[in-house]
Image 1 (tube, rainbow, N blue to C red):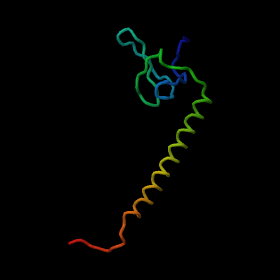
Image 2: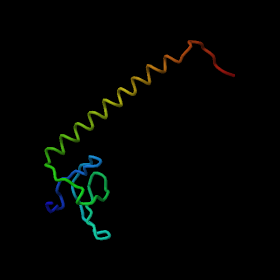
Image 3: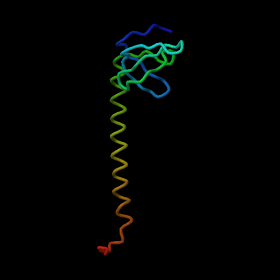
Image 4: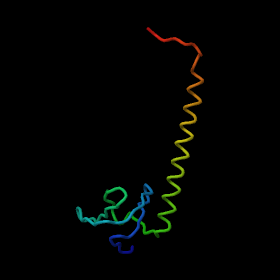
Length: 93
């Protein structure tokens, strides 16, 4: 395993989290690295070094996919809302 340094771009494989190391912490004999994108600590033996170009492309793909998924959900909600209308105009009361 390679040595990690502050500022190095890494990925936590279990969740796909990508970010730069901002600090290290020693807890119960294990070394952890804090990642800038989440502010969370990750065991360094679970991190994988990646290149900055890979980080940028991974972030773009995730954001683009997220936007497309949200648009699709909104479209489905709008369509299903009209299916449940019986075209009556009751005001309640």
